[in-house]
Length: 161
Ligand SMILES: Cc1cc2nc3c(=O)[nH]c(=O)nc-3n(C[C@H](O)[C@H](O)[C@H](O)COP(=O)(O)O)c2cc1C
Image 1 (cartoon, rainbow, N blue to C red):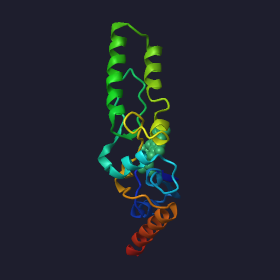
Image 2 (cartoon, protein in one colour):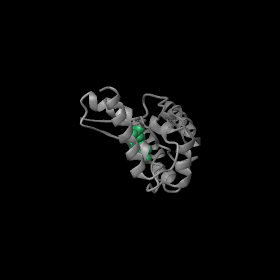
Image 3 (tube, rainbow, N blue to C red):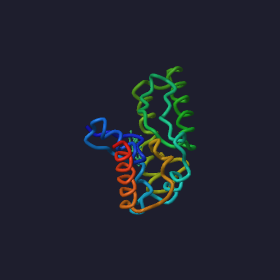
Image 4 (cartoon, protein in one colour):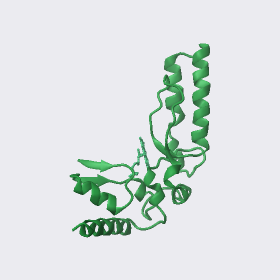
C-alpha cells in the first residue's frame, strides 16, 4: 500500500512506513524542483502559498458534476462558483437540460491545468496543489529534495530507536 496526499516532510514518510505502508507518493513537493518544466509564474504561486490556500473545489448544487480537486484559490476558482450558479439558474428556469448543464460544468476546467502549468496563466488556469504546498519554500534540484526527505525520515526513525 502506498500513501499519498499532503506529504511534504520526511517525518511523515517515516510515520507512514511505521504504520505499514510500502511507500509514499509525493506530487506538490516536486513542482518547484529545478528540473520541473512548470512555468515560473506557477512555481512562484506555489512558493507563496500556505497549506490553507489549497482548497478542495466547491460544489454549490448537488445536481452539478463537480469533481473534488484541491487547488490554490484564484480568479478561476471564484468564476467557477459563479458559473455553477448561472448553470443552476438555467436548469431551474428550464433554459437547458441536465446533459447540457453537465457538459458546461465539465468543460469549464478543460485545459485549465495546462493553461496554468505551461502557459503561466495563474489567474484563470487551475493551480492544482496539495496541502503540502506550504512546505515548498524554494526552487531546488530533485536530488536535494529527495536527500532532505530521506534525511528527515531517517532522523525521525532513529529518534524513536
Ligand atoms: C501539478 C498537479 C496536477 C494535479 N492534477 C490533478 C488532477 O488532474 N486531478 C486531481 O484530482 N487532482 C490533481 N492534483 C491534486 C492532487 O489530487 C492532490 O490533491 C495532491 O497532489 C496531493 O498530493 P501531494 O500533496 O503530494 O501533492 C494535482 C496536483 C498537482 C500538484
